[in-house]
Length: 392
Image: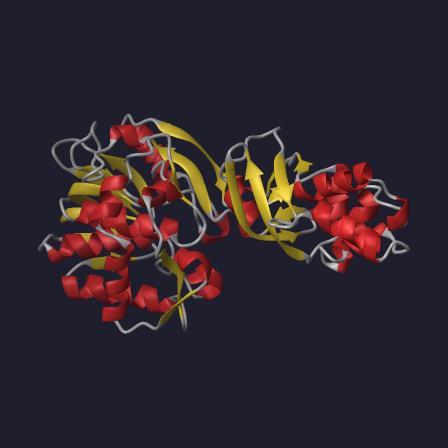
């Protein structure tokens, strides 16, 4: 039986950050994970270069049924704080669009940084360790693992959600939360491609590989970023973003020419090239392949000279407000994150500790806090892990 001050379940971004901060305080800390390698989500993120934070991170970039919960942790450990740590380790980085920060070389640099910080602080990491039972028979937690029993004064759950199961992701954290009497807000895949059926699926399949700048909206929420047609439906940053807001059975609106007065462009084309076909006129606004497919799908036909203002306005409406009803998403298989999770109304926003079970903490993705695409979910891992590590 090994006795610990703190046992952290999960060797990902949040778990390692918490372990580092707790070990700095002289606590006896062990971080365990069932995987062969730590921080797999960090390793594969950002195309292998890890979009580790975002310069413009604010509480408005997060979804939760308790939207104010994230404010305290984000304020106390900011994107600049994490960037300072990155620079301390001399990891070269660069900014892409919309404040997204990436490693110049490899996501492995971030993993190595965290492992180094944990070792220097005196914390330990144990991999390939599965958990078979967790209980709290007295003032300490008892944990049965594949590598022997453990006892800990505090237990930190940093097991993430079920997104990307091929990496070993599971809903274990939710089961543990329920065991200790916590409410779990129904999880679902988020930051995930949308899928379609029938004609729209066929159209998307024919356009697979075509990308375009687009504004995608659902109700009052809109994102303007890249959109990508796939064999199953739609993907790309704008689609992934809106997927977190989309409600089943309802349409999303796609503007394929944001900032463009489509009616004005077509009206001018009618004056300048009256003998031109409408399909050709659309290539002034859209990539040729997309213009050709949509003109056929939307029955946009005829010579420009023969088309009335009403017809041209109809074309503009189709391109600026294309209404599509997804049949679903690609699910956890390709989802970058999980929406929902442990109800934060039952946790302390300052320490991440359970209001029901003293010494039990939840951090990172396992909680009902989900960030936008672009480094925000990693920042929540750093901030929530840091918050718990200061007090656990």
